[in-house]
Length: 528
Ligand code: GLC
Image (tube, rainbow, N blue to C red; front, side, top):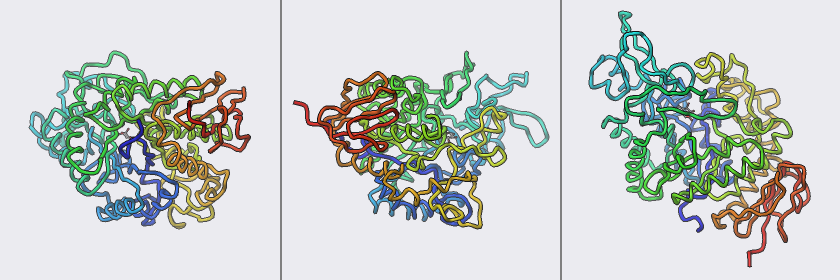
């Protein structure tokens, strides 16, 4: 089977808007800035962009605390700016998907403000998850907030009296919605329609695994840390409940009622491949982020296992697989793979691995420049996670430092020289700038552009089936039809398949043998 609809094999590019390009000169990226840089993405060769939230928000969690889902925050621009970006992207044949945040709203959202004012027992409170205090001053259950501390905050009346608790799986500024309530369902269907009517091609569904909580909200038996090192594994009764799937069945019907192959991808951090596959059954979401490649260490067996199991789980439900190495929530993969020269080499090889696989690939802005995680000083950090976790987790700002566009410009071409970017750059960031890498044959940017070009012409139309070929234990070698991909993670040399003709290599070297931490694509003769 080859691809039929655009999103099955598309390369998506995540624009973390506040760090992409600043159009109005305030040090924060915005819609105008992003629109101006779209030709860069067209040249790079991506098929679609995913825009992180740009809705009205007090920005307690970088915009993932939405106050009004149908309006643009002034920091990011206006609805007209959005329309202009969408039109320009479509002109350049780039599809546009936007982030939808349905698990929670901002505590400044009109619904939450009225719920607080209306008091305990009011119908307004039913749109959220409020509980009385049991009398001992402890939270209604032992669930933890994803950002650290309890998942419950107790309201205080103006006269100082304590009253009900409300649930927030993330920050206290992000109260969870009650998805049993018909108003919540109706509101989000209206929000989806609002953006579909404007012409968006799809949605990224934030925290797609969190909307429905276990009946009775029982205590969690074990309380493992959700984040350890580079991995993130939400475990407990608040995640991945069976009831969540009916929401996506409704949304699928809604999306299918629009022309033009609109799609949705869920951000579902779930434990197993099978659990993930449930989100992409034929009548549910089109895609779900598969984080198994991202969570695998740089080891052949782990990477191969992630690939084999992901492909099997996706194909069992007829879905297209998805792949991602980095996003705005995790440590950038150059750094995860060891940092420095080794991390860079491995990240280049990983890009060729990911882009050779059947399914859709999601790039995170800056990975095409080889950006590493930045050690942002604590006083400059903005992510609420640092404070909420009492410093146990330094937060996600290290992956969110603004892009360096122009090596010689004082604002690195991201913002004007007289303003400071919202997060500071490291000293040597100019060396990684887009204009430095552009046209340099050995740059990461050139590697990505070349890989994306070959992917369009030679890879995408290949069979979806991955056939593993003999290779040393510390290497991966597979073919899809007439293309083959090899990645060497060990010291034993990895030879190209017989009669393989080199398409692209992750680092300079011979065409038919790969050394450690190198990857390549070859064209191979069709099988007899
Ligand atoms: C998702 C987002 C993350 C945000 C969280 C709460 O995981 O990717 O950035 O903090 O949801 O909305």
